[in-house]
Amino acid sequence: MLKDILVFVRDPAQLSQSVLFVLLMAIYSLSLVRVPPILSTGPMQMILFFANLAAVCMILSSFTSRFLFPLISLEGKAFWIVGLAPVNRSFLFYQKAMFGLAVTLALGLPMTLVSTLSLKFSPVLVASAVYVVVLAGSCLTSLSMGLGSTYPNFDEDNPARIAVGMGGTLNFFASAITVAIIVATVASPYAIRYVYAEPGSSVTGQTIGLYAIIASHSAALCFTLALCLFCFRMGTKSLHRSEF
Image (cartoon, rainbow, N blue to C red; front, side, top):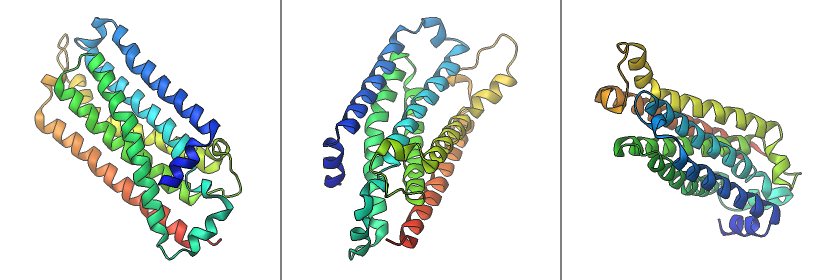
């Protein structure tokens, strides 16, 4: 982990792009203060809530695709040394995955809190947003690490080129689909209630049944656990089968 941090800090391109990325995240979160109040009340409240949630998750997917996917490949041609070490190769995978998840959540959770509080959502919706971002961060990290281990490129030392290769492109589209599934699952009770709502009535967080909300959040959790388990198995098996 210390080696990953030192390599990242000593690379001017990586460091400058990450600083720019963090600045853009801060600008997005703070810009929501200027959203007209009419968009955060009434029928538009839940639309704005899930639109902001999807935007935060997509920003995190861009981060994981750009910075986490190349982690295994950045070991380079010297990866054979790690392969010969008296340590299970899955240890390296889990170490990088946990490190990547910690960084992803360290960026995503503050952005979620700032954006939702800027829009003056209720504490229940803020907690729901934090819950969804934790699930999305876990899924995006596992996807980046699993596909990064399955499609490594040890001949390339430029992480930007690694991220736009075949595996990186697949990871980007898979991350976008994953974000859509998680957000749509959590939003499904609100969407169903909106379809069957009486004309002129508004659909907000207070009008949705507690059991429907628990069911949607539980379904999102099950999807996250299944995806993480699949990606971890795929990544570790790929590393064990690789020859250096």
